[in-house]
Image (cartoon, rainbow, N blue to C red; front, side, top):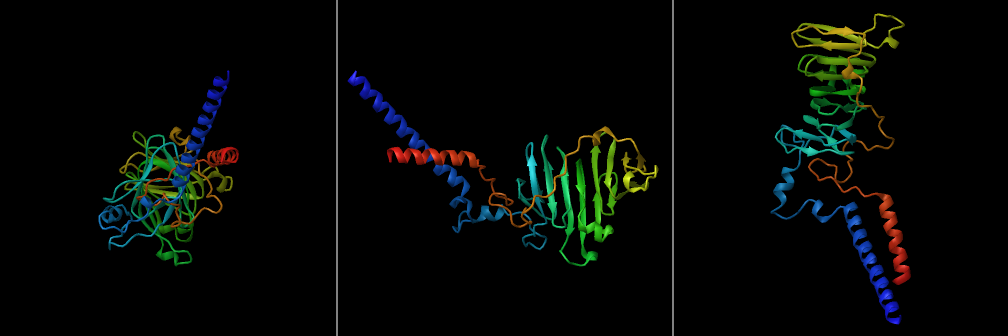
Amino acid sequence: MKLVSTMRNSLIVFSVASVGFFLSVSLSSLYAAESPSASSQPSTATAPAAPAAAAKPAVAAAGKPGTPIAQVIWVKGGRVSAKLGNEEERVLQRRSVLYEHDSVITAKGATGEISFTDDGIVSLNPESEFKIDEYKHKKGGPPQQEKSVMSLVKGGFRTITGSIPKDNPDAYKINTPVATIGVRGTGYATVLSPTKGLLLKIEKGTIDVTNGAGKVELSHCEQANGSTNCNEYGVVKSFDVAPVTTNVMPPELANLTPLTPVPAGFGAPGSAAPGSEPGAAPGKAVSSFCVGLLEDLYKRFNKLFG
């Protein structure tokens, strides 16, 4: 019996020691994941300097780094990425920054929302491609010098426009394969259907839809002073067919990606969190609950056997 008791005690001590070692290693790994590692910092050595420079996107035509003009609010459901010219495609996550000329791409089932420096927000549908063709904005600057020209290549989005079209409606334009969208301070949604063309829904304000065959204006009924002549939906079948309005919502506009207000204290573009900068590998997400649990167990272990 004494031998059995001794073996049992030895087994317990061995098990506890193993758990302690595991917790020690786990905590070290978790803290390393949360802290910027040496490998994540720009290298001063000559050999790795070339890959680090190649990973930097947002290079202007003159060869100078671009200025961030937007930031990712959230990403859900899969891969959302950005590509700038011939630069390597980079994966986006919360607080990743975007630049003029970036193309934002959502995979199947993936959605994401972007906040621009003029306080405009755009939420992208799955399987979309949205390009920032030209963007010029400076807080307090002259409205005539501002510009927001973007393109919907495929898929769809929902948006609430910011100060650029509010101060200068002519400065805002969304290009699509079949028509151009202009606004006067508004909220709207649009989808490019492979079979039906461009489908639009006005949610606030007014938008103009123009192509080579004609032009229509969409306005929300609540803002039409009770008039039944309001046109909340629009359809553009092709560039050679004039846009038309309808009060019947196309089914493709029924399940749009929701718009989320920008969280309070959300950092301005350019203040991205470590790991979210373009070209950087996404950081490891560590649950604060898991960290707290491991810390508590580790302290108890040290108190009993330290």
